Image: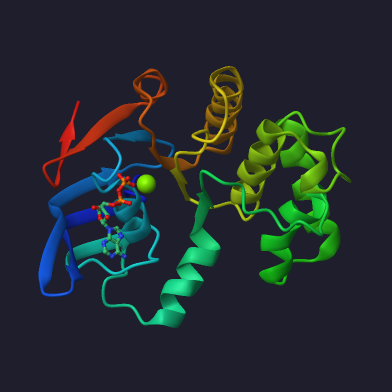
Amino acid sequence: MNEPVLVLENVGRVFLQGQEKLMVLDRVDLRLMPGEIVGLLGPSGSGKSTLLQIAGLLEPPTSGTVKITDVDCSKARDAKRTEIRRDKIGFVYQFHHLLPEFSALENVMMPNLISGINKGVARARATELLTRMGLEGRLSHRPAKLSGGEQQRVAIARALANDPVLLLADEPTGNLDEQTAELVFEQFLKAVREENVAALVATHNIELARRMDRVFQVRDHHLIEM
Ligand code: ADP
Ligand code: MG
């Protein structure tokens, strides 16, 4: 099947700040095919996070359509959006947002436990992903006992745990030093390719963006392919 994983059509986003209208996105179109890795470049404040939040059904667009695997989510109810998010989308943020009182393994098991998947299956899947991220020696470590790069690798494994079709990453290595960012990004790309998941990755690092299949820039509220 070769239907797109994500389709944004004519998407606009306006924020109200008091009486003022702040236009962030205007007539944005984007189509992501299965397994495709797409970079989103743009300076701070250009609207990258807003676009990812809309694609991830965390915020509705002011106008336009968001489709995930051909389901029009723009008109979906909250419960349906939550279900699609849980079953089809993985998120990685600049900060790891791991649960501090749980081990790396437990953090990665969590999405599947929440989905009602059997504990043994969740554990096997989490172990596989953490091993793929080079963390087989860190399974029982709590986040505070991990380095920044390791914490981020756990967050990446967690985002892949429920077999998403779409991975949304908002500056996933933005909080790491240059050398660590490079390594973690390499592993991130490798894992995304091995899992054959479509990814939309915001970054302001042009070098990292070049390693993706396609790159767009958010400029003057529009999305421009580079
Ligand atoms: P980026 O991720 O590229 O740095 P953002 O998407 O976070 O950009 O923000 C784009 C613009 O939208 C900024 O001017 C920001 O201040 C504004 N913005 C983002 N979220 C909100 C909000 N909830 N309310 C008002 N303005 C917002
Ligand atoms: Mg941002």
